[in-house]
Figure 1 (cartoon, rainbow, N blue to C red):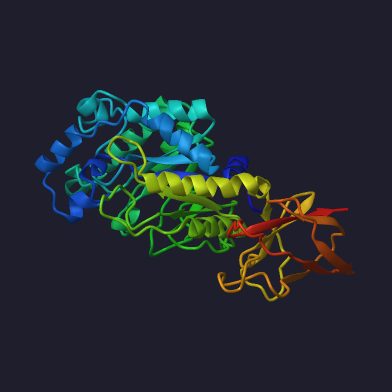
Figure 2 (spheres, rainbow, N blue to C red; figure 1 turned 180 degrees about the vertical axis):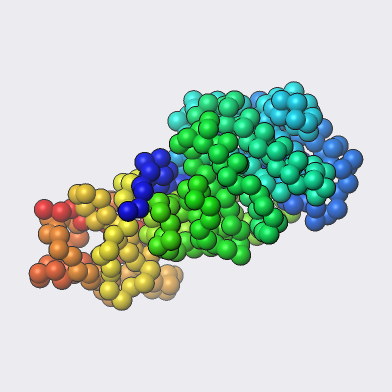
Length: 409
């Protein structure tokens, strides 16, 4: 019998989170891998670290952006591959914000999250470009890694989880996962433990203590848990442009519509959606990042009910992009390709023709209405056969993905 742990189900209920890549590389302004890819020396990188001094209110503004977007948790890079820590390493080394700018940024972050009702999660690198022991004495490095993780688990109160990244760099090494994950369980027994499998192994299961699989920049799929003795969640992480950390000259942004579609596809699969931002060195977001979060937040505010809905087995016939979610009282029908009422000379789709949805269900439906404007939709039911007559967006409105609520009798 599969074990289902409540904290994993609670993680799924969070649904939507903000990923934050923030560190010395933010001051470099050329992406989170800039030290390695651009061959920046330790001495030069240390000079950037001296200039990495976030604004006093950076964490509060970050939490405010997350709330505007409708997100319920934030996962932040406490230490990335460059080895620089945003938390007090308490003597493990002096390569942290306490030594460089006199502040524990993770304390500031956690306090802002707790004050704002956002669940804090910690990203922590596994690979490390700073510690010589990573290459010279791997066992010594792993002891250092565990002590680092222990500090995060002991010093910041209850956290939502820890998100590891980089094991793919040494896939054949013994990472002593039992000891690493055991350290977390000792201090944070209900923290999600996530270990990113990277671009090459999306959705792959791993160690028994891992609580979620990852889909980095890839649409989530149904997880094969036949070989897992416990229930496993899933999470898709997505970047808005070509870098995770701030890159001044990266203009290759995806659209807000694409973000909304990613969010809804994650809902279709029962997967969490983790949307990345790369703050400026002062901790504030670029204007375009905050604008996209605001637009996504408008969609979430209109369709907030579906954030608590779950996937169901009822399928819409002959429409691969449309799907149905469910709660105890209703179905939520999500439509991706609705037209908008407009003059055919100025719109690609002008609302002409019929856009009917057909599906089979043993539920008797009392009424169906759009969530955005409350408009009632006509429908028929003949036994299990259900036919819904949708209507187009009115001129001046286009929400990308439109949701209708079908209430059960």
